[in-house]
Length: 137
Image 1 (cartoon, one colour):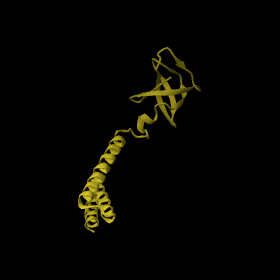
Image 2: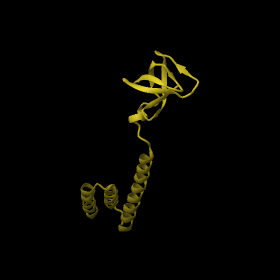
Image 3: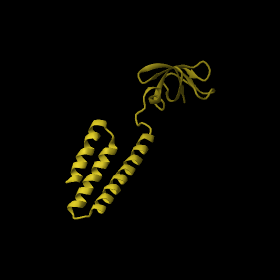
Image 4: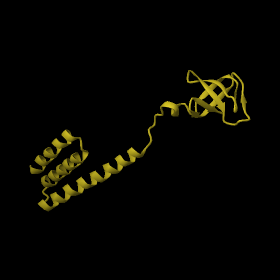
């Protein structure tokens, strides 16, 4: 019975503070209660409580660290424009540049390769955004 009271007691700060460690300690307390219900001695109950709590904290922390290290799957801003196709509106070259229609907007553009020339109507791919100018190939 004391293990269940401890589980509830650890569940309250979990809800109030949103610290997941309290939830894992509460799960350990429930495991201790199950051990007591199965007839385990006091030492066994505390060992199960400690083992379950530590294991849960270790697993969840490693999962959280891995999730935090991943980059977001959704690109926004200029990162979302890189790799997209555009249509040349005004001749694009490596020197003066030109104009393209990219994502429904008109952008100034220049060729990545200074010797390449793209004529109006051609499809190009955006490889970078340099200020307000799209760099295309």
